[in-house]
Image (cartoon, rainbow, N blue to C red; front, side, top):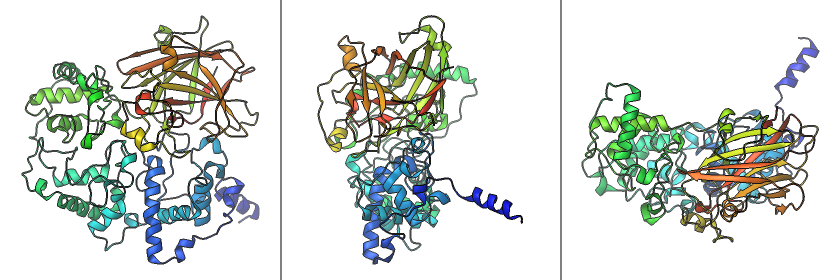
Length: 582
């Protein structure tokens, strides 16, 4: 082969990473835990599993398949850690990526991989490196001779507790809390109310998870371990599983047009008073929703039926029919098998399926509409409907400990309009409550924040973020609050100010996730207008574009749900999008 062609081919085969990514960390080239005794390695793997579930699971998934609930929230999808690319293979490279985060990639502003150098010791990082190698093996590294109790202790106890009582090390950090498997109040069943689930129900819940909760997919552990684990869980509640298991009677969907079923389903939704909990528009904001309690008396929330990804058990009509018929044991969701006939339950299921939407994926570009008349300044201006809307996914804050891994607001619908040097942005999002008080300000630990989730008296907030300065070479600040070299400016709307009659918006500058914001006292004011109805905020922000703004510029978003205890860095955020102004 021609030497010149060979050199070109070898060059193309090398993954494009920053120079730093090719350098092994100073600590070691190979994981020192490889030479440790079995007990030390087992302890390191156990500790790493807890760390992984706390900080890595939301994006990378429960066993590293890159299928966590927030896997496609940002510009660069979460990596499949079980099948790593060459860019993240090898002990030293993995250690450096975990320690330094996005700083190790060529375009760090496209990644939200946090740097764990300040939060984890070297030993903990090496433990994660060892765990990732294990997860990449067959059955996620579970030994062939591992029994179901062994599998439970290795993969389930971190949330469900060693005895299955829902009291594992991570239990206080999760919403909803892990299931108490001894009480055996299983939500996803194909059996009638208060009947134990079928074997297939239990195995299906383990294999496919429960929506966007911390209970994700465990299919990769293998078919036999799944079946054995399902059988083991039944031994934790022998009295419950000694009862008769009565399946929900089969029923065919009525032979009617979809439109007729939807119209009938809408009527059934009203007649059955589903809106008392789920709200008129299905956003979980019904009058009874704030008083719901789950197991152990902790706050519970009516599902937002417009977001398919939040519907546990599936948002298809067949899934909905099953849940409507059998209810969800241990929750406020009753069974309607004896309250509604088959046709009405099918009509309701089809209606609800039609109301849902899929989780948005990272959109890359937000196109602003150019207007010739005055910019729309009211949320209900008809002009907004003439400009395309972009759905922007928001993800968890895992940049700074304590992490906020299950944010309340996971999507914003954004419309932008520009006229001359001014920009108007309409931000809309689902929120179960209109939170306009600011009575609970101050520091609260994570467990306290989650224990009172839904009852905090903190204001709802939303923010738009821009780079403070535009780099002519295209480099951007870190997506979460910028960095010391490249600060960001934010327009922050707060519901308590609106409630007090103040339409102005806080403008601040931040120079990194660990830096304190500084409120800007210069520059033109940013004005706002807002409305709230049927579990949905609509907020308009109007301000000046930067001088000499180019045809495109970066933009990002952040949000806080006051009732959920979100304040400061307990929030959700987006990656950088490109705002097209032409």
